[in-house]
Amino acid sequence: MKVNAIKNVGKARYSFSPKEAESSLAALDLAIENHRNWYIHLHEGLLCNQMFSDTVTDIAAHTKCKLGCWYYNVASETITSHPDFQELAKAHQSLHDQARKLVTEFKSVRVVDINEYRLLTEKQIEVMNLLVRMRDCIIDQQHCFDPLTGLLNRKSMGLLLDKNHTQFLSHSAPYVIAMLDIDFFKAVNDTYGHLGGDEVLKSVSNYLSSAIRDSDCICRYGGEEFQLLLPSTTLEVAERVLERLRQGIANVSVPFESKNIKVTISIGYALSKADIGIGALVKQADIALYQAKASGRNRVVQYDPDIEGK
Image 1 (cartoon, rainbow, N blue to C red):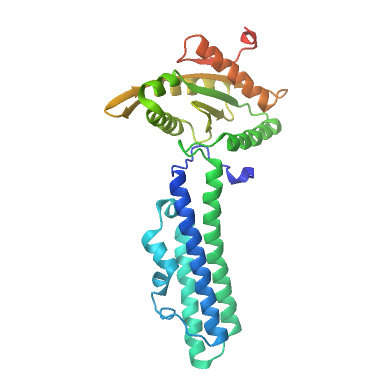
Image 2: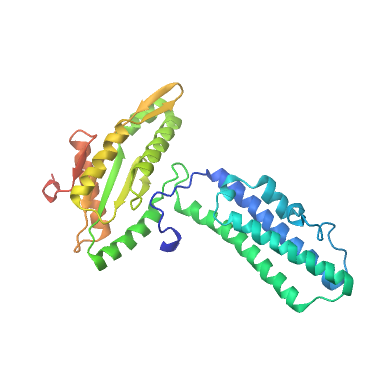
């Protein structure tokens, strides 16, 4: 996956479950297939003297074809929330308007005007490009985001870290990487079961993604651990941001089966340096996180080379 596929997604979330995404992809694939069939039947009428669809010359044909029925009646939120969805309505209606004009003239003179046909082809290409782009976007997001929490996954975060580090080397703008871990998460699972644990993970993720700055990026690193990128950030600013997140999580109450689950987080963080790579920086943040947990949890600890090896 390319970096530009997930750029500018600091606070973006993909909140649809894998089942919802798969269902929407299947419906979108069917819509694409139905539209291709409509286009084939239109050509059979123009080229092979076959009967046209009853609705091809209807003023509301764009709402009555199979693609239109899907678009206006059963398209899921996974699709309707896509930025190209509204553009598809315009392009699809324009295509049907052009088809109606072409078929009406053809029935009268039995000749297809080349310029009108080229315009039809252009509009068909536009519709197909929008449909395919929407489908590919859902597929990309399935690979970029963690299905439970909606946060970026570890692989996607790695691409953003690479990009940010390259910018750091070019512009010398310091950044901070932080590792966050939910304290005593095993006890949550043991007490409330994995469903309770999942609710905690989702609630913590919701809070973190809403509380970070627009420029920041967060991912689910694995299990109950999260990774946070604070670009163009000094140690002093990072400490304030991370302490605010720690306090905010401590105030989060997670409702589950008539009970409220409270958790805390431990945070370790490290500042970028020109002479160390991303892997080493992540390791430093992880060492600081270990120190935060070893010294009592529910605290923020900055990496200190003196604590390494202790």
